[in-house]
Image (cartoon, rainbow, N blue to C red; front, side, top):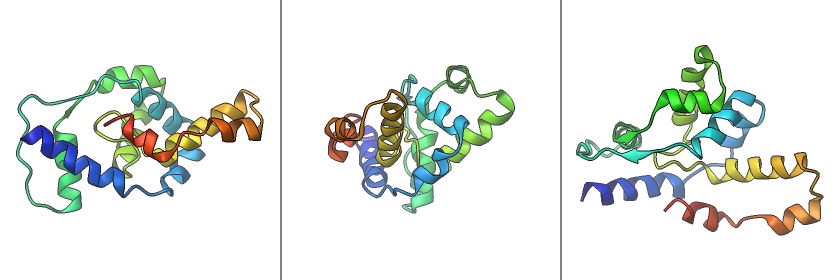
Length: 143
């Protein structure tokens, strides 16, 4: 029951994600590095999840993260972000709903990163457009 509730609550957040999240990530190498590592991080829900409290958006977001397990140290090492900056940057990604407690990320941010990588690789604009992943496919890949 609680695992189903976890997925339902998370789906509400992913269904309401905002494109403005890209603005936070776009100009900061640390955010990009943490996000790239997050997408490959070993993440799971707790075996014995707590029961959700009140139904506010903030409480639900906290509840999701309280029931998520991952190694902050492994994530920090994989990201290459120095420890003195890592915690603040990770907390900002969480607070701004850019990374999700199931190991996925805001679909607008993922599309931005994909476009950025393709440009770095020299893929021209028409080819980049043909390689675009529909938003539904991005969100379905972590369901």
